[in-house]
Each structure stands twice: as C-alpha cells, then as structure tokens.
Amino acid sequence: MSPLSGFLAVIVFFTAILVAYLTKQFQNENLNNSSSNQMKNTNKKVKTIEKEKVVAETLNGRFAMLGLIAAVGAYLTTGQIIPGFV
Image (cartoon, rainbow, N blue to C red; front, side, top):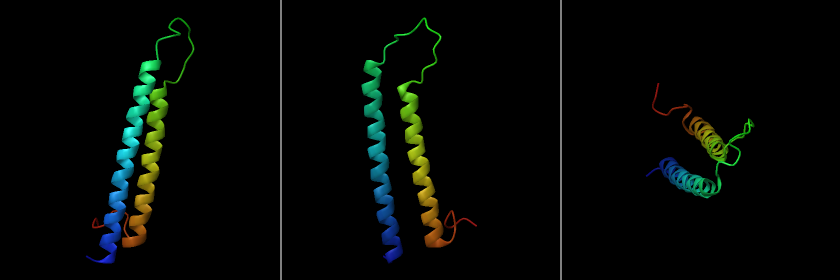
C-alpha cells in the first residue's frame, strides 16, 4: 500500500466516524426537542423557527464544510476535483 492510499484510507475512516457522530447527535437533539416541543401558541400569528429546522440547517452546513474540505484535499493530492473523472 502506498503512503497516499494509506493517507486517503485514514481520511475516509475519520470522515465515516464524523458522519456517524453527527448523525447520532442529530437524532438525539430531535428526540429531546420532540418531547418538549408542544403546540403552545396555536392561536397567535407569530412565525417561529422549529428546532428541527435549526438542527437540520446546522447539520447541512457541517456536511457542506466537510465536502469543501474533501474537495480541497482531493485537489491538493491528485490535482483534480473528482479524482479519476476527466
């Protein structure tokens, strides 16, 4: 195994661990908020942002940053944004 393929294997491993952790965190936050988020202000015309949407946008931003780091890493190691794709 070449050093580059070993390095990429380590990066893939850490990415998988990070995705699993963030997914578990997202599920835990949704469980905590679903039990405490009751319909309190049903008659008022106040727009509120649900906690699930905030958590989803935060997770989406984290995955976007992870994808950007992966694209920069692929470009630095191979010279291509998508390695193997012409």
